[in-house]
Amino acid sequence: MPRTVLITGASGLVGTAAVDSFLNAGWDVIAISRRRPEVSSERPFTHLAVDLQDAAACRQAFQDLPQVTHVVYAAVYEKPTLIAGWQDPEQMATNLAMIRNVIEPLVQGAGLQHVTLLQGTKAYGVHLHPIRTPAREREPRDDHPNSYWFQEDYIREKAAQCGFGWTIFRPTIVLGPNVGVAMNTIPVIGIYAALCRAEGKAFCYPGHISYPREAVDARLIGNAAVWAADNPQARGEHYNLTNGEVFSWRDLWPGLAEFLHVEPGPDQPLCLAEYLPSRADAWAGIVKQHGLRPMSMAQLLGQSHYSADARFGYGLKAAPAPAFVSTVKVKQAGFTQVCDTEECVKHWLTVLMERKIIPLSVPS
Image (tube, rainbow, N blue to C red):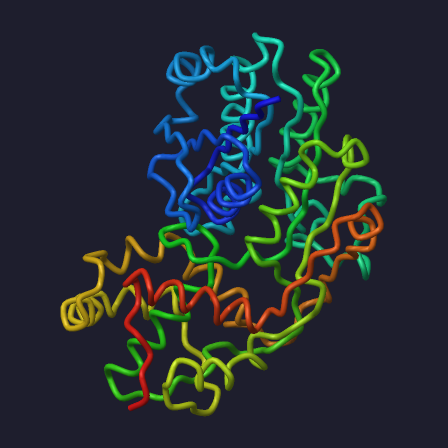
């Protein structure tokens, strides 16, 4: 039987990866995003630019899509400066309204079989307090207001009414090639390295504190969504997702300096949220010199420079509490993909070079 997946947030980190993964698995794909996602697959797909906050536009776009059997909901509304919005009631209400605007028209037909939803480690309250090591999916819901809970409760209720299944993934730090998004550290590293090279400065680690973290390649999440789509064992389950190892950004730094052909230097804390926007004119010169895509610093960064500062430990006086999650459950269920985090970062930096987003790294 033909299967069609509708993927929201398709130009974001998880959404773009999901488009690629489902295309590679032979599915028909309808991608929903303001910008057409830039994918690696050469298979055709349908792109619809729909404002998910506009209920009328969503009804018009989605009510006539009886072929949709699956949804990967990867859209998210984030307020400027990012972190403050995580506890904002208006942001939570907006995220709930958006998922309703997608699902309500689709369930008017009888074809919807499964919805995949994305959460993250904020489900364990990592942004509010220390969490158990490792955090496991079987733990009781952390009692705090969260967009995740509003969306999950809605999907649970709608699934019970309409008979479709659902799976929720909780990835850690997501790594991919997307620019202009809220939380992708890869282009931040590439832009910072290019500025260091152009201005003859050392590529110094810009954080105050180095500490171990977990990350996950966007391709792994996309593949997990394909795995869960028609897997009865994944129905009604939550799964943490990581690359399968821990790492620290500081320990990656020497290898990244060598890979990017920039001069390493001693740690030098730098607020990238302030520094990178201040170098917008210098970046425009790099774009012209290297024939890069004519994109401004602001267009490339989105809000990722704010999240990069947090991830690199800028402004911290001590390492935060450990924030590790267990991936035993998803592996025991049959999804066993893993990824070398350093190779992942280098892969996506290479993709950004190939796409002429950042300049090629060449020996000086």
